[in-house]
Image (tube, rainbow, N blue to C red; front, top):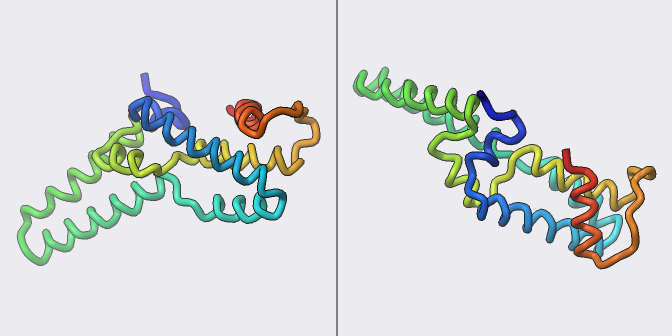
Length: 153
């Protein structure tokens, strides 16, 4: 059985790394909740430009495949193994959420699109974009935690 699209990378990532990414997201939500609406607007614009892990992997695979093809055509046909391997790893990532760069990128804090959207919707909720969401008054950390839970899919 194949893992879900939104969970496959996180399922292939050790819990302590997922926890670190989650804690960083929570700290960001707290920081921008305290900073106010203009800071939230700027952070949302930053999130629009943030590359998710899929984009990093697509660029990485494209560079590896093109480099391997060029070397295979210009230098030695044995270089053609590189794009074959890269394509296989990309296929494995699409199906299972793992390929060699994933552990490195996750350790660097590169998030999935779902993790980025999680922060985005928490900030939008704090800004008041979702009037139907009632968030009780409490500490900033607890407010951020409950807001993140409310928008979690």
